[in-house]
Length: 121
Image (cartoon, rainbow, N blue to C red; front, side, top):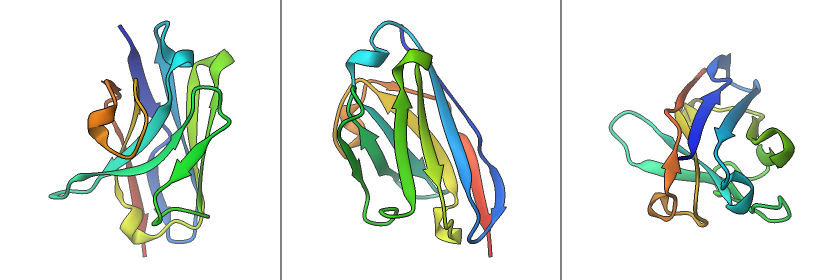
């Protein structure tokens, strides 16, 4: 089975940066797109970014476009989310996912446990 473990979350001030990592085990990691989603308390899980299996195609939610960058290193079985110019509204638990493609969380089959990102104003 595929296992995903996120790390890199924490507390930062508005305007700061964080880099999230998602380490994967399993043989399908390099064959599927990867996505990042986030969920604030009491809200739905929202799409953040996705990247194709080869890393040649990316897509971002409008709310993070220009500030966040998704990348992957298949040799390390790891996907990253570089988050710059963070805003308080970015505060959420961030999840990585694989096994699908698109902006819907229903498109992905495997999920990590999440990592908390808190942005103070």
